[in-house]
Amino acid sequence: QVQLVESGGGLVQAGGSLRLSCAASGFTLDYYAIGWFRQAPGKEREGVSRIGSSDSSTDYADSVKGRFTISRDNAKKMVYLQMNSLKPEDTAIYYCARRPLLLPRTLLPSEYNSWGQGTQVTVSS
Image 1 (tube, helix red, strand yellow):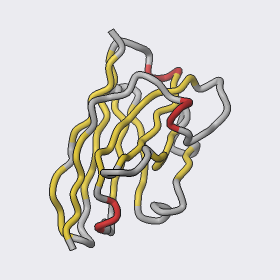
Image 2 (image 1 turned 180 degrees about the vertical axis):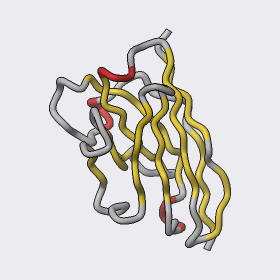
Image 3 (image 1 turned 120 degrees about the vertical axis):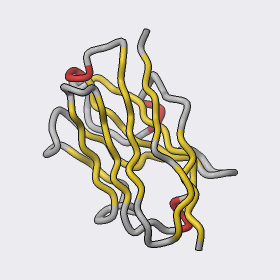
Image 4 (image 1 turned 180 degrees about the horizontal axis):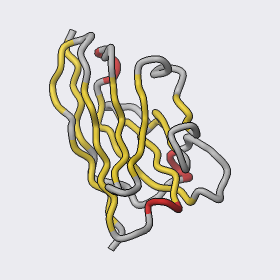
């Protein structure tokens, strides 16, 4: 069955780095854009970044531009989110989800499906 599994979260000090991974199974990753999203306690889920067919087709939320980098390896069926210069406000549960490549680019969580279970990222000040 279709499955996305996130990993790589943890506790890190402000200014530190983490690399999140999203492992895809049960479908052909090549045909899908993958988005990373996050949800902090008491807040709505928000789009962080998405990647299309290649590393040159990426989008980022303004809050993470210049600090986060998304990439994909279709052969390994993996999508990554490298997070640098982390801030306490980056603390959240991070999720990945998929959207068919043929559809318009968006970071709206409601436009994605097949969500993973999430991985917790905590940034201490």
